[in-house]
Amino acid sequence: MGILLLCAAQESKMSIQDVFDGARYLSETANALKSQHLHIEVGDDFERYAQIVKDGRPEQPLGPPFDPTKQFLPAARGIWIIGRNSKGVLVHTQAMRLLDLYDQTLARYLSSRFGDFPPGGVGIDHDGSWFRPGPGAAKITGRAVYHGEMWLKDDSAYRGRGLIDLLARFSFLTAMLHWQPDFLFGFMLRPIARRGLAEREGYMHCDPYCLSWKIEGRNEPLDCNMVWMALEDLRHVMHVPTKEVMEPAHAA
Image (cartoon, rainbow, N blue to C red; front, top):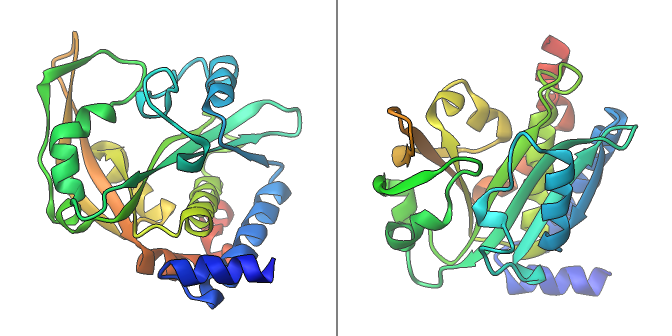
């Protein structure tokens, strides 16, 4: 295992210490979630993930960016994460996919491809929707991980306890160890982002008001911020103690 970890560190911009620290913190985070009676499962078969979502998350349909009938999602390019309670009931989902931008910026990529990343469960008027890249999107290039599908069951047993902080941390560490990405990004509805969710999840940068979805049959669009981090930000976030991450749970 030590040789494999060393090879991973040498092929990326991560140091061998980053790899070992990341593995330790990932295990620590999984144990913290388990102590909250949340059992985590990770996979890369999106046919299976689609069925899990259909059976256990009917109120929020699978998002098109992770729908295997709409996207090419080979095992090497995608990861899904789910959480079940002690009764086996699905209470959490999130997913990630790797984009190889090479020397192209995310701003350029999304200017023509933002339509590949719509929210699920609503009809999108693509002609009335738009993406306007911010300064962050102009900096992002190379290996970029898209993070989405974040869902936590609307139940006081899970909401307001700091679990979302730990769950995001788990996904960031998983992406960092599995792909060693240059950047990680996602889209977040502006009202939710402005209530502090982006900071709680650990995102350190934000391009506000850069994406707007025109919804069929509605007057009000869904306006989004793009949240993002570079590898150096992931390194910083992973060293935040788990106790600190769980602080909202103690304050609730």
